[in-house]
Length: 314
Image (cartoon, rainbow, N blue to C red; front, top):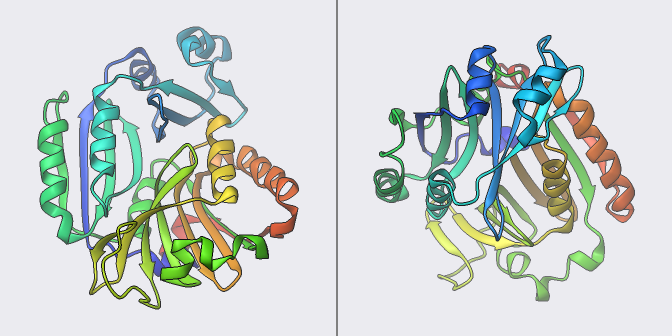
């Protein structure tokens, strides 16, 4: 299970918060709602995806109060996107992601505050601190809630799942031979065919990720890759993968929050894991179904599905 393999590799964690006061946040606060949020970056700017439970809310009221966000309403959830172009938060988010080892695990809105959960490697502690000081301290009621040794990805998601029930989904596929040409792929050429990685963000056709190298094929620093920790065999670089890009883009266009998006390659077997709010699972499985039709030669299979709290307690 990928999430167990990588849970404790990044050794530092930070949780910080700040207040929000737009009409969307006021609606959530007035109705006592908690929302899970996913930030997406684009060439032109970026946007935030909100998923929150439809707890007996009046559909007309939702449309009237949140009409500018074009909410999608089901019997279980409300899904919407909010444009972040030109906002201070988007610039702060991009600044944090420029720190090589930073992984933003989740953004949660609860009780009038946004809580941002992130992990990073101890070598980047100074860079994280500088980014927070330069970009975040001016936000309304900004506070660092935790900064210290990482409790691990599983424990983090288990904590969040107490507020928003989350499910872990892992998918296996077989990479077609045409995508395994080592000579044309610096990742395969230098890191081989046995590694795990955690997604940082997707920007058009470029995806950045933190790699955990199993075979340590790298012999020295390379221009195309950021060496985070040679001793721990942790690197950061960009890659392209049509299946990963499809999943992310389809989930985003459907206003579905997907957290984590860890991946593993062992030979030709490529696995993708993600964490999804339980309330939007039907919509997420529609994305998987469409992917299996779009990428028939990848032979996609659903390998594992369970509540996060069950995995974390094993």
